[in-house]
Length: 199
Image (cartoon, rainbow, N blue to C red; front, side):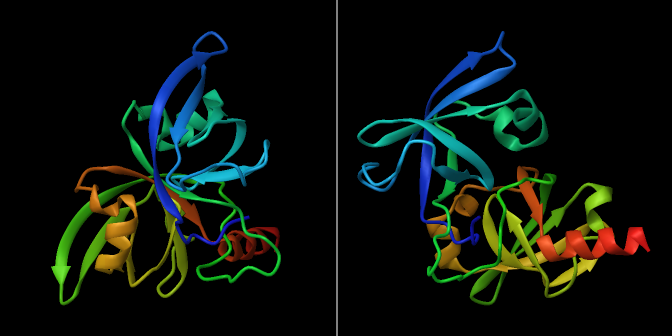
C-alpha cells in the first residue's frame, strides 16, 4: 500500500528479457543513496506500478515485470535510461500525505495539454473510456504513482494542477503532450461503482 507521495526518481539501468522474451527483468538505479534498508521481497511502486524487489545492490534494485504488466502499463515501452517515480510502501504509523494507492495500474492515459497557470501548471489528461466514470471533481487519482486532486472532468478528460515542487521532484518535469502515463483510479470510487453494479 502506498500514498502517492514520491520519494525519489529512479532510472532503468538494464533490461533483460525472460520467459521467452514475454517477461522482463529490470535493474533500476535507486535515488536513496543506499538500498541496505530495503528487504528482499519488498514492494516498490515504480511509476505507480507495485513491483517486488528480487535482488539488491549497493545503489540499485532488480524487479521482474510479467507480460501482463508490460502490456497494461507504460513499462512495456521502457528502455535503458527511462526515469520513473519511486515510492517505498506505507508503514503503520507513517503520515498519509496523499491518498491510499494500491500500486495496481488500471490503465494507460495520455497527456493532452500542459499550460502555465499562475504559479503552477494546468495539465489535461485523457483516460480510456471505461475509466472515465471513476474520475470525479475534487477526487483523487494517481498518475505515474503521484497522488493528485482532480480539478474538473469532461468526458474522458480531466485536469489537475501541478506545482513547481512536484514537477521538480517527479518525472512530470520530463513529460510532454502526447506522453503515456499510468493511471490508478481512487480505491473508494472503485468499490462505490461495484456496489452500484450489484444493486
